[in-house]
Image (cartoon, rainbow, N blue to C red):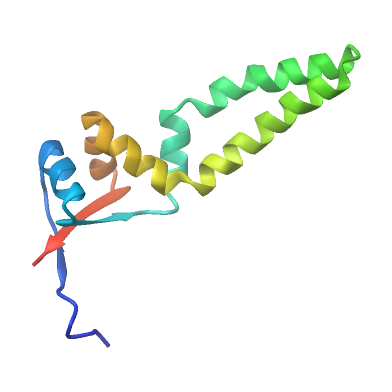
Length: 118
């Protein structure tokens, strides 16, 4: 059952500039798909490509006798993707407000939906 005090929101198609301005003034409600956002953010930030060398160097350091330095790099390589997955909706909203292409792709791929009061 819906609450009569709450105004319904409808999906709108706005430009990036309108989105940024309206978001600051609370005119829009942003819905982010929690299943798609982590994959998109990790892809967009090149997380796997950047962390593979970190993991490799960490393993190499561990094998060559620098156990603690190697362990620290391996932990960084394992924890960063988990943190990004957990914070993906917030990161996507941040990226979308800063970059017009990310905003357009997030809308186009149905990762993010912008709604305004009807």
